[in-house]
Length: 242
Length: 366
Image (cartoon, rainbow over all chains, first blue to last red):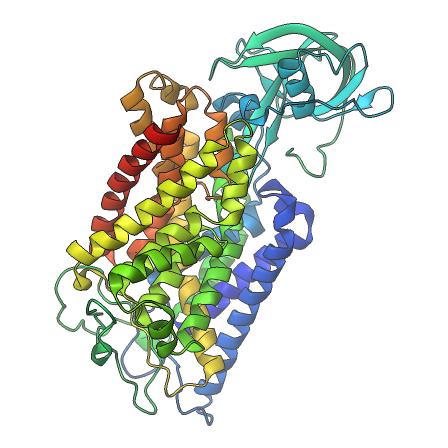
């Protein structure tokens, strides 16, 4: 891999990172807070590529650079061949653009509620129904025994995944850093639960707390249920993780 | 064939006489030395297609055009949920690591180009056994993840820092820094002793490994990729050359590591693991191994550890201590930056020391 090729690969990588970070695409892979760093890294990569190509171009023209670094003639270089692999993330970002983690990943891992326990639960937000996250609902239901939920109607948004017996459950992935550590929060649905929806469909569910719980087949943790009153299919939210 | 630079390092500073001296007009070349074995006979010049008219750029262009043309079949081929999840995890490990990689590479280029060698002689204690703890603590203040600290450590060794100190820095920087410790505190709200345990155990491991290197390490295990002497080049040019080289090089190995981590992530279901949770010895070994295989960045591993709630706190502490020091992507990057002979010895030794120290610290404070 010669210097120009490295320059081109870096340009592509920087461009792919910039493209992903100025659109909302990066939210499929990492936390929102990483955006400024991604943009900065993309700019540095593009700058490194441009400088590489400029220096190479000058050296090729046999300009005044006495320390020219071009690759033609003389002994061939053993430039890092492993650098070719950097095309793969470029492809991943520009051509494939894989979706955010969904029901497959949710089925592989156990519900991650245990890592999210907090000691006290403040009052639900105003409004009827109160709009809260799947994680918030699940931890209030399990660790607070639903006390802070009371009789209020709540609205949560998540995607459909398959439960232990293939029944639809509501799931949402939580990220702490990137999708490699993404873990599901699972909530069972009782009452007027949606039926016949394919997995990975996003739904907005309105319902009330029920003390029914189930057990996650993967890690044996408790899965809370929500007593569904109504549900609607919705497009995936901008940030699919919580 | 450019000379293969082998770094022979005395106990205190790098032996500068072995550094490759550039003559005026010398090309800057960033030759990668052979990864292992004794010095090789010069290789024959690489065969060039079509008499040298087809270079890497042309190959790259053809590859890219083919990929764009066959985009749909490629996307179709990876549409199964398992492969799609693999791709998502692979891309996200890369996206997460790239800012840290670029930051680390830029810092290591600054060290290589703008920080004079004499600075390190003044900044670190002369005695290498004392330089080790100082370097470990320097790692504490530098917030970064493991992908960034590998090129930085390589740069430090190249600039004459004793390898023992640079390696202690390499281990300490990603494991104990304010961001990582804060994340640990957030992930274990009811067990603040985990934060203390993680910090203490990681620092001990970094220092033990530094001192072990002083006693047992052999300088010729480390083979840094050849770097030029920068006398002939302008500083800006040397800086950008270093950035370009290190990103392609360390980044390529990062891709290898990310692919391995994505594979493990998709192929190993969590329920296999949980059958081991009840046995105290097996649970420690299982989580130590999982830390190596998953290659989660050090800022996030505390949350994963917290969610493995069936496991004992000690085994989760082992997970947190091992992960930032030995994992697939680190092994891959260390192989690239320091050479195969180094990585083959350093990673298993670090693994063993990290497991033992973490269990010991866990026994005392958890």
